[in-house]
Amino acid sequence: MHGMINSAFQGFLVETYGSDVWDEVRSVAQLRFAGFEAMLRYDDSVTMACFNAATELLHKHPNALLEDLGTFLITHEPYAPLKRLLRFGGPSFAEFILTLDELAERGRMAMPDIEMPEITVVPMEDNSFRVKATWALPGVGPILLGALRAMADDYGALATLSLDGLDGQAECVRIDVFDTAHSEGNAFVLGEVPA
Amino acid sequence: MNIQTWPPDAAISLPLDVMDALLPMHVHVDAEGKVRHAGPTFLKMVNDEELIGRDLMEVFKIKRPAGIETFDALVMEADERLSVVLRSAEHLPFRAVILPLPGMDGAVMNLSFGLSFARAVAEFSLTLTDFAVTDQTIELLYLNEAKASTTRLSEHLTTRLQDAHATAQAQARTDVLTGLSNRRAMDDELHHLMSNRNQHFTLMHLDLDLFKQVNDTHGHAAGDAVLAEIGRILDRELRRTDFPARIGGDEFLIALRPAQSRAVLSRIARRLITRIEAPIEVGDITVQISASIGIVSTTCYPRRPTIEQLMADVDEALYAAKRNGRGQFSVFEPG
Image (cartoon, rainbow over the protein chains, first blue to last red):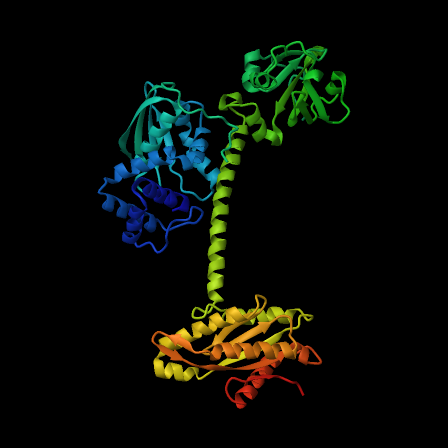
């Protein structure tokens, strides 16, 4: 698994639960280094060991922890560049959802060897969508749930999101958009490259 | 571009809103070169409510090809790649093409940002909806930002690796007990000194006397403490430009740059021996040792010696000093 993904999970644990929890996770997962490097690669078993150690130590349901991780990726200030890159997907939340089909390509444009979820968006009746995602590891559904819910807030859209079971190998999220301009949302200016 | 149509005069006429959606950065002028209509993104950038009816050459300056000052001259460049700037923002070059319309009915000029896209988009506060759906400028902007982010991450990693590398390298070259350089560092230093034929230097080979007794009588911990003290003495008594190293058990090698005169070397050797002979307290006990020193300088030889020659001769000088009893030094004399 790409170091970017591992270090995001590490950052999430440190920022949310403190560095002592991360140290415990490291020790339970038998990691031999202090932390992940975003630009290196790690074996998938290392990622899974860390994740399992975290759910065990925090007494959290895996889905709840993954959903929080998804929210963190969008709302945590140091990850603002990631959120900005996602906002390139479309001018409104509904258009953004429809371009999630391109998310994997977008991710690979930025980092050619990163594992991105392959997403298919199925438009349903009345501004509803079914997002079907497959990934190298299980758990992409809850991560997307947390991340997309935070993106809806960022766009200022009113939407409900829920896990929607499996479709073959794909984990699904259902999205019902009620209002694409419910609140102000955060402005997205193309030319604003954060320092 | 070679436009082929069949029949040769085939044409379509487009409503303005279709033109706006396809080419939001186009401007349409009449036969006189006066603006008739402009795409929405173009209007946003020019930000001039009186644009319609103005002379195109008042709005733009043509940078390339050079020397185009009139609209008639501009139309002669039909289908060529133009570099133009808005007179209201001369620092942002656009790429442009102008094509005359049939029946002498003016011309259409279309713009793109070329390589100034990132600055232009920021300066004109453009949004996703300001670009045609088929325009890949958005992807360029996306890539530009993604590249900036990943470059930053790579730089962070490189800095951390460099620091770790420097630390590891320093550790690999340091003698843990004394904090002096180790044999490997000394070998590198000697190669470095030898590589410059004009660099003259002196080598001192220092061997502790009575050290074995300290180890045998008081144990290795006491011996280690004594070695650490010798490290401190050498560090204190030598100049910054000198290079002391512990190269084995109780053996030290010191490189002095530049080579020193016999008188200066005698003074340094005597001072080191005196300092080392001072009683050393180790916990509750006090031990006393001494040192013998052999000395050789590259200036002693009629021709530049090899490292092997220097090492053999400095050893011989050390044995000569030892033969004279404890706490002596000897300077090697060739021949």
